[in-house]
Length: 524
Image 1 (spheres, one colour):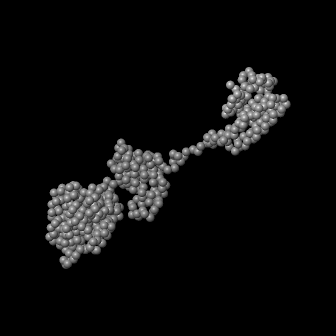
Image 2 (cartoon, rainbow, N blue to C red):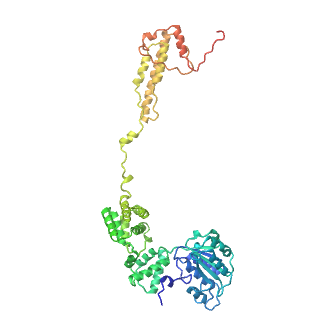
Image 3 (tube, helix red, strand yellow):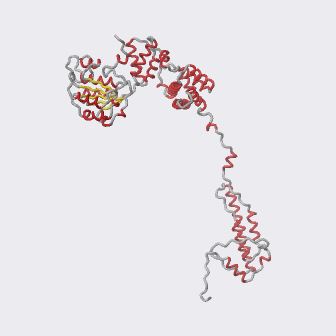
């Protein structure tokens, strides 16, 4: 008898032996036990997760008659009656498996629907299983809509696909959809242990774990790799044999890389990379395995209980967990993930891999960058602070007032008053408290000098001056500065009275702009 591959030999025959799809098994078994059966089912999922296996088990459950031939619909097919054995052997007339990739036209679908109207020949239900249903054409989908919505009572449709996005929503709305999950590595390892135990093949646990990682969630891929490993190792499935078969990277290279990073030794990093190049190892796979190792180191640092105890590199993981800070591990993991995405953009894989390692060596938390930026010098802070305007000394303020205190004419007294008003300093708005106190004292002295000058002017006018006209209600106009060569304000020439015309002209000139002059109506 010819050899039968493990994936076919150990295909599950009932719901109890199905691995990793508990949510689908629960829904189908409850529906079978309560009799609430739908007429169309849609199984979606990646390759090798059990879509065809579930279809066959469901077909057996619908048509099982029991060992005595008196059974009915059940969630536990016997596997001994004629329908069960015929479905397992692939020769049951009323169970039709059609590949939509090779029968995707409207003519093939019309032929299938014409046969569906006839009653089953030797079964309770006629079951049509259409695999890779997303490969059908739009006309084929449209032709089956009416039958899929209201099929005959003896017809059940089971659709399977790896790409449900390509199926029209009109078809999806007519089916019960079940999404099959990828197989976790733990489930794959347990299933492989069971199968190899029945086959009598010795194995290593680490080798099965590596096979489960290489399967990427597919149980059929894991069984195919196991067949290949048995043939490659001539019987025993060992870690060295599986690594050589898959071209997997030895974990010792990754441990050496992390040791070089911990020591900050760039030469050692390049030496390990060159050694990997001499053996033609995959740099993309090396970054993937490096990310896995960093993930386990992070687990050892934060959640030690979540780390499996049967890892061959457990001692190295625990040692490296003490040499790196958690933030360093997180940074290295991110750099490894991004480096794997960017390795295709590098000039070559060696350059992309080594640049990723050098990036890990360069960007380490707490070294360089803003963490070691020098604090600003006190002198710079002093220059940055706003400076207060210096207060004028009281003597400087009082000097103009002292000159104005001499006996003068009424015009000179007004000019002195205006000049004293103009020379009074204003306090700085943003001066510190100390500067504000000095400015306040200077203002007090200036005001005292101004009051003394005004009193002296009033006394001089009472002694012999001409009576002053009352000033307008507004502020006094600012006095003009004397021109060059003219007598000073306190000189006798300046104090001499002018003629009446000049006085009237000056008085008119001193009137504010806001005042208005009215002409007498008697003047022509």
